[in-house]
Length: 225
Figure 1: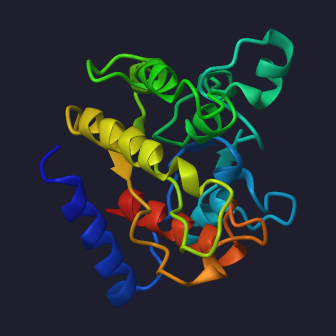
Figure 2 (figure 1 turned 135 degrees about the vertical axis):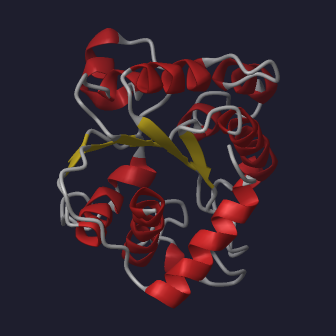
Figure 3 (figure 1 turned 180 degrees about the horizontal axis):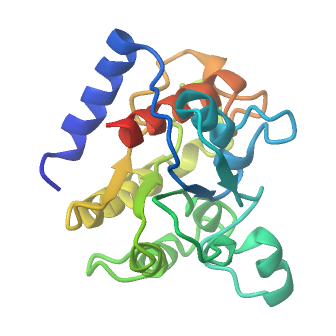
């Protein structure tokens, strides 16, 4: 990439303060994929994809699914949405916004085999399920935004014990993204102030309406720029 990810993240945050909502009309074709971070509030049409739509005034096609994983072997439920790679549909996409990996670590390794699972997702050698997925998306011609996860505000989250593994996962994805100008890693590490529960739903895992809106606006600014 032409400049460090942390500079991109800081610039997006600053633009959000100075410029307000992003606007970029036109005919951009955007696909969103992922797990419950992306899908939360979809029934009420206030999920992250909806926030992107509102900010850019474009139609977003959303294939995200609650509980979805990057590594998922069951064929039928995988095709129904529980496999994030299988959420992809060929199309003339300008952008694909995707997240994933959290469910693989939290539910898939049982706190016993996290290193092995991490390496299957994305190894130090830059290989694994996530790089394979990004390569597939880029092969279709789209630019890719890979979205990181919310951080706990320190108020007692069921996934607090996964913090170090989550940070390492995102470090590897960020490092991989820097090798391709068409891939952007958007960290959410700075989104949640310590002690502020307003960015999380009552379960302290999923995003609140406020968080989904602000995340969608951050994504929209990358696309608009």
